[in-house]
Length: 438
Ligand code: ACO
Image (cartoon, rainbow, N blue to C red; front, top):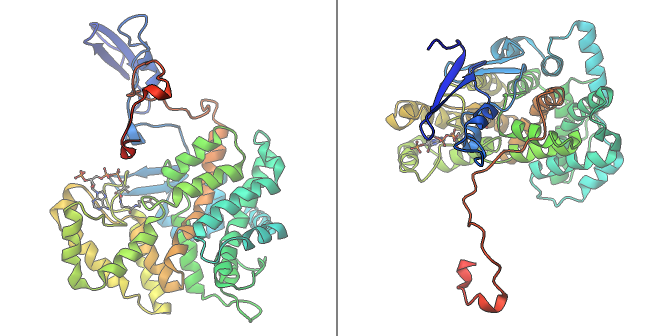
């Protein structure tokens, strides 16, 4: 029988019935499987996909990623060209609005962001309540959540003007909150944002100004930070972005939603990996210890942090750019000795059958921490440095999700594996159980 092209024919061997399902963009709609039933009481076929290994949950026009070929593009522009030619705020405009800004648009956008870098004095007071050794990601997450109480009208997410205002506020305030959390831990007075400085220079001034009127940032280092921010700005449907979309789909306000995304980013399997890479390199200490460490990884006792990716099965293009940035940064700061251990580790890993077979390459986190450390950041600040630029991607994806008429509240199905119905047992008839079993 001649079938329509762009369809999938499925025969259910349980019933011998055949179904024709449309294929579009290399996908079938999971809901089309629901018609496949063994009888009128059957719920219908579902797909089972733990960790979403093979499920597209949305259509998106923001970021294109080809993990097999090591390609990353924002709105169609290759990441390499954007990193070479743009400022971070220019890329932020592109990601949020879909097009690169004209000069006038960029000036207006920059002014809007700068105007919103200040935080309410009560936000400062709120942050003063954190313990002196609070983790910076914990402070970032909770302070962003607290902003929800400062901007109650943010919950009007259906209003595009209000949505845009919160997007600008969040991009503006992230470096301020991050810098305040840094100074809080050192017991230093907070430095107010300076609207005459670029996005990264202002951040550096808020971090490192002491008694001088303005911190004088090295142009090489502020440009390096700018490039690192561009590389981290979006990465399609990763764990924190999916969290942003899932929480946002309940129509929670963007501050609560962004705080949830920050929580997801903080985990060591996601953004928290950059911090773990530095701890790992510190533990390895010398090149001589690398083979022993690799053996532990291959035995399954350790993970090589900063290696492997759900989507990239080739060199992460961001890691390649970061390696170049490292050389420029070290010209100013002096060479971080950890880079030599990292390069040797990469060399050994990439020629080892274990890593080759599993297509494990360095990801964005492998080299970024080494640069951040050379610039003066402590490892527990690294994930914050990821969260500041990724806020742009989260907000663009949130905005896209809200404007997508196909999206509804995110609510996956499950395969129930628990006990079938059983009758209640009164306490006195439940017998005695070992405590460990409870
Ligand atoms: N070190 C050693 N082995 C690894 C590593 C690693 N870093 N990553 C994956 N593997 C192995 C797994 O053990 C598995 O081996 P097996 O087939 O023998 O069981 C195989 O490679 C496939 O790995 P999965 O865990 O199935 O891959 P998944 O896509 O689920 O995980 C992840 C991706 C979480 C990034 C993983 O590679 C990892 O844990 N890496 C280290 C943490 C890290 O660097 N995270 C940052 C990711 S980038 C980012 O979020 C910005």
